[in-house]
Every structure is written in C-alpha cells, then in structure tokens.
Image 1 (cartoon, rainbow, N blue to C red):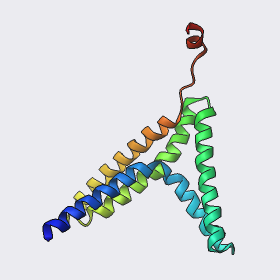
Image 2: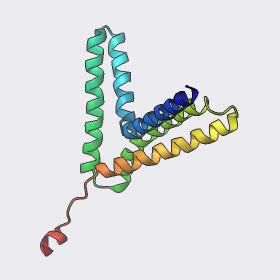
Image 3: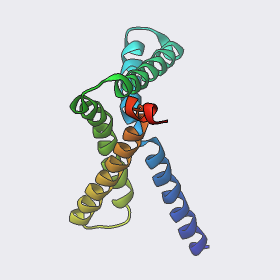
Image 4: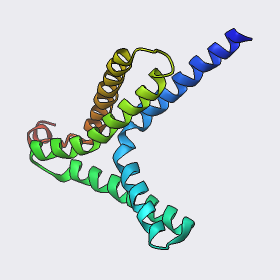
Length: 146
C-alpha cells in the first residue's frame, strides 16, 4: 500500500510539472486577469462580473502580447515583450518547484538550489514558447526566387 502511495505521489508530481511547463506562457495573462478580477470584485462587480472581467483582461493581455510579437519590428522590443512574459513564468516556476521540493528534502540550501533550477527551466521553456509565437515573415528575396 505504501508503494502505491509513493507511485501515486510521483505521478501527481509529474502531472503538476507537465501542467506547469504547458501553462508557463500564460503566467502574465493569468496574473493580470486575477489582479483585474480582484479589483473588479472590490469595486462591487460581484463574483460573476469579476470572473468575466478578469477573463477578458487576461485574453486582452495575451492578444496584445501576441500582436506586439508579430508586428513590432525591432528585435530589442520583441525581446522586451518576451521578457514581460518570461519573468512571471520564472517566478511561478520558482514557487511551484519550491512548493514541491520543500516536502521532499529537509535542507533549505538544497531546496533553494532546486527551486532556482526549476525557475530557470520554466523560464527557458516559456522563452522558447514565446519565441515560437513569432512567425518568421517570408522575405521578398525568397519570394522572388520561388
């Protein structure tokens, strides 16, 4: 029975890590959506109104980020937009990894080391996914050759 619990725990940790890697790109829109939703609830919008307003704010944030990545020309500006998406993902990766590791090892030094490694891994994954959102526009030279 103990072995079954250990295997279930490993499967749960794997599932949560997979989910974290998949959803890392949405850390900034989620943060904006939750913040706007809490603000809307505090101003008297009610629970349903706060959820709807927060979801719209998250969608608008993601849409603006994707449009900026597609239409902004200078690479340094695209890098700033990418960093705006990657930084919250790295912070979320740090805290998620720290939450998992603090249950597995007693040493705070190793907890911090693994948490930093998790933050770097999530940040790199988010950066690769954000970079994948920018579609390479075909150059006119390649069109002339075709």
